[in-house]
Amino acid sequence: MMWMIAATAVLAIIVLSYSVFPSFVLRYVQTWKRKHAGSGRVLYLTFDDGPGGSDTEALLDLLKKYDIKASFFTVAESAGKYPSLIARMKEEGHLIGLHSLHHNNALFRGNRFTYTDLAQSMFALQKLGCDAVYYRPPWGHLNLFTLGWLKRLNLRLIFWDVMAQDWSEKETADTICLKIMRRVFPGAVICLHDGRGAAGAPARTVDALRQALPMLLQEGYTFKRVDDNE
Image (cartoon, rainbow, N blue to C red):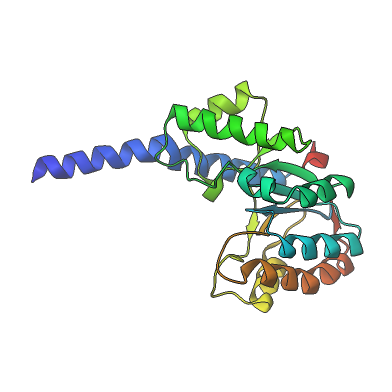
């Protein structure tokens, strides 16, 4: 019995060291830096898990209405299904980054998977005319191999500071809006989703932004792409 407890403890330490700990620490460090950067009333809208078809189209319409440039961390498989949306993102001045090939979690993945996922994602977007520079790992989980390959492939890691659980079936447009308004701070990177999630979730995100964007603009915030932070 004792050997089972010891083995479980060792496995937990390995998992923590391999993925959970570096993922958490790097995200914390990025947030700390942004909170203390003194960047003024600037926000960075970012979207994961798309493109999501008509929901992404509605989101782009909304961003265009307010002349807001955002950053889209696309799942390469989904990007291949909606090349016209990728083209529109580029045309309207949004940043297009990587969010993996199929949205697989890196928590229990090894070196070969990590490299293949990044390389194939980059190649898929290159075929769509996008040379992606920024990468956000699915679920916020990277592993030690991820860090090495990001450096070799000249990719920059970007996490987030604010989430509103907009992928959840428990959230409504009103609760998503409320969480955004309560959690933002000057310089914050906001992570929302224009694809995947519970049924109807991306549409609720767009509805939430229809409420939140005018209020944030009225409070004096401006919006930039994440690469404008450098």
